[in-house]
Length: 111
DNA sequence: CTTCTGACA
DNA sequence: TGTCAGAA
Image (cartoon, rainbow, N blue to C red):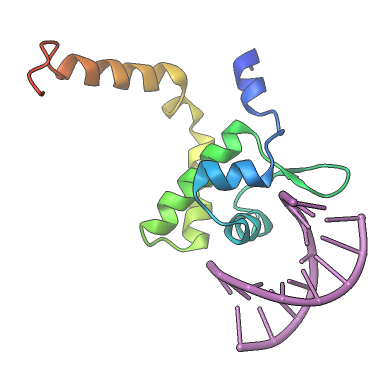
């Protein structure tokens, strides 16, 4: 596991930040974490702390729920996602973004 | 002041 | 899910 991955798993983000970054309500975030859709870290005082990766998972949960999936289905979906990290790593993502750049015109034909 | 839990609508 | 109370 490289340093970047380790840092992206550092749990230091508060509820307030998670709310702003995901657009979800505190109620929803607590509900999802309680349902173990994702397991978050806690401060000695019991406050939830999220890592960048967990914020990302929250966004995926939001997308799944918005798409009409149940919590149970979303939970399975995330489990599968976790078991196939190679499908979503940086190299793959960068190639996708690069290919998209190649497809757009380099001559600013769109205003 | 912010977040947590449990509970009721 | 929203919201309220009481505690941390």
